[in-house]
Picture 1 (tube, rainbow, N blue to C red):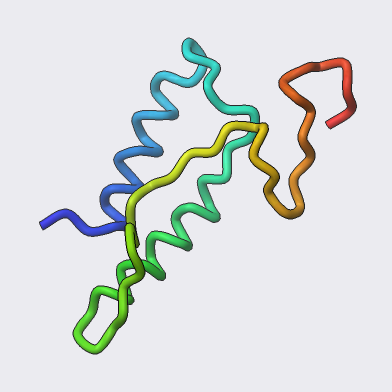
Picture 2: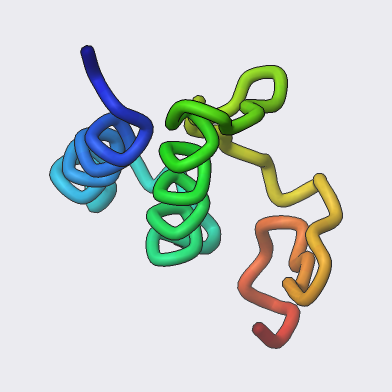
Length: 80
């Protein structure tokens, strides 16, 4: 069985291999993703209560507002 943390590590490893060529990310939140995956993994332990879609790695486009993160609309003309 693949754990949430193992899945996230595999996704991050793949992203790091292809990102210079794909340019898919405006911002990488890998550390936060690993912490969330570890928390999800704990919810799957006996007595835990996993939420719907718990442990699946999400991705958000820059258009999606995310608290504490600047939206530049993909342009380098706006300060980061």
